[in-house]
Image (cartoon, rainbow, N blue to C red; front, side, top):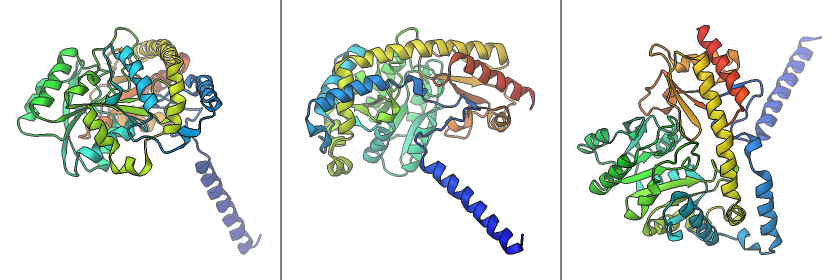
Length: 401
């Protein structure tokens, strides 16, 4: 082979490789493709087998059989009115207090709700309070809006109110972001007494309390305290909910619960003025799920599956990683695991790849680049035997560093 032939062959091979990579990226359909050879205990999503395809198919068939194309039109700005009524009924039953449809605004998921809150109620440079640790992708949203997070510590009873009171002596935040029930990543739940004090402080100091309550219905033992959404009519609480954890994340449908005047502020934003209400098509489908009471049945199924997986992961951690410490979560998706102080979870992650296991290191959940000896593990995606194998691989990794 001549030099020119060699160069041409090399060029063609490189071009084919590049095209294959581009094609692979183009045909990707899920946000987090999971390598079947790797047990990724960091994946915070349900397995495909837990997504209720038949339930949603039946609801879609019902909606299409009605021969009414209205849900293909631009939607009402606060959201599909029928969905808001049915959602209010579901929440009233689930929360144990009356929810008014006028206090609900339909979003394209919780993340979009947080982004819209930042757009309407903050300016670049504003200070916000966040829990330490906090949901790492919410921190990304806040960074996009150039907000300045100040961490408030949490313990096993949730946000430490004494630390919040101390911070409020010198700083006035635009809002405080909290995940009060089965927190991501810690799994901790804010106590009822602390919830009441938080609401009182938000009124006393005139800041917004943004409560991310997407895990509230995923309880596996005792019922959680009253949702902070119950204080939303008092003026300073905005509760964010989602169908992603209790139905299917691909629906990209959620809600904000807050006072009626604030609902109208969301509805009159430029985004809604231009595009109309969010996800009217999906809203019509999900409305059918609510009408049939299929959502309650789906949540009951998820609770049963996740409770077994939670116990499996707890048992595996006790067997293989006795040097680690954790609190048993009572709901949600996650274990928050503390490694020995001298261990860096981010460095452990580099080693974990060779053992075909993964997780999320604690530093990602810190607004101050701390929590280096912590890691978040999720029990929602894998079955019990895979969870045990994943922890066994983590143990092998730790033994080899």
